[in-house]
Length: 240
Image (tube, rainbow, N blue to C red):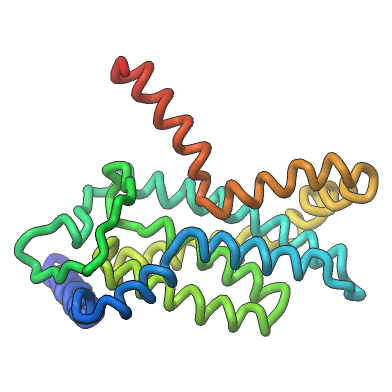
């Protein structure tokens, strides 16, 4: 029964993938639009602009709002580690774009993305954007709605081009949402986030000098850090 249920879920996952991917490669303008919606540059710009607006917004609860925003950054780190850990221990899942015999439609565009031989399940991009969506929702319902729309379109783009199956995206989203809600509690606010916010008042130059690079690195899903670790791994483990 369990195997039959898993097979049924797999059939639904593949059917949803075909429903989205069937539009791929039909129109170069649509391909370009979808490419921009899923680009890391757009996600980074959206993160930095939204974070900046909410951080410097004058409200009666500004300190609490800033605490929540800092916990969102922490949730990004924790959830991405969890997603990568699951990808490492669960059976490897080949990305749709590299899987033969499933009826994948190729786009007009040529991608040079370095996917680092990572499993498709779960989607770290979905984990990333839904951490931000959940966190911004906790701060502002209006920004939460905007980010919900943006995140859905960005993840449809990932499925559209065959980077992920819908199930990969759904699992990543659950991780991001769950971690963000879990760490947004009174203990984390009082013991961690409030102490960091206090540093901003005592030493703003040092605080923002560290915060801005951190936000940039998070906006790229730690692209620079991953590049360094990837190089070290190949140098010392694989001998260059």
